[in-house]
Image 1: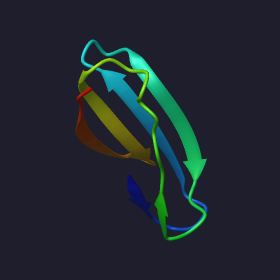
Image 2: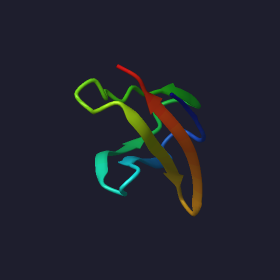
Image 3: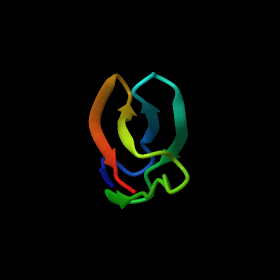
Image 4: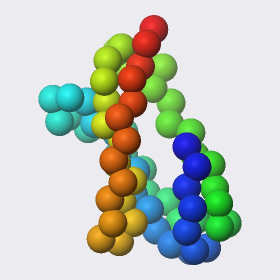
Length: 68
């Protein structure tokens, strides 16, 4: 995924399944104005997931579909 913002801004990434269980969670600081991050879901089951990117009081939610 591509993230954007000010250098040094903190972003929290959270991937949850449809039951609300946390699959992955990661905090990071932007090292450039645009930055790419990869979440490895190879070991996760096929299905629908929700990815949340949280920056301050802003939340961006994206649906992720994993197909084996």
